Length: 287
Image (cartoon, rainbow, N blue to C red; front, side):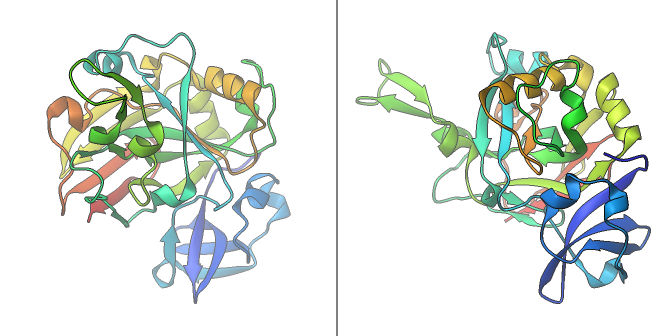
């Protein structure tokens, strides 16, 4: 997408959402409209700075377009599969999340207490699509990626399965991904999208590292090298099913250390931090 590295974000200024590039303590506005896919799908030279704003004068929003699709991958780190007592799937196992599920950096997660008493975190590395993508190959899959961001896949563990027929010890249970993963305001991504050759080179090398901290305590820490399916495999598989569009987000799975494995679920007032190496830390609190 670019010969230069930059951080692209959505910002609210005077009631208007704009797209901007971070420039130290300032924000260079590159699009006066809330059209992140348009900016992602074009070279930065097509979007020179229109004006500069002080970062202190704008509100950072989740770098996610309301029209985007968000996909996530289950059981994609070996140790997480072990803690979940799940065998590795034979192909990438995917589910969908909606844009309304997400808050941005500095935001407050909705624990959705009326629906779940076991609200959990999953820190992940996510990639953002920058070019229309259909039937990608392993060799060219990363050519369609515009950038990378940190991601929290909020999960409602106690409504993750539904009984077929009457519930009970002998019942057959079916996964309910929408209930488990699709609660409004229960997930987060950001702070911005890191774009450019440096971050994409690290993605190709699988050298990015994901760290999650709960109230300052490290609870997850793992390299992408421990993924079962590479980002290339994920994009190739997903794009064989459907056309991916600029602005779509794909989270690549969570490592071991999630709350359900620790019997420690998120509580009101908790602070959750998710850090991808080389990127700004995503930080949210629990409402």
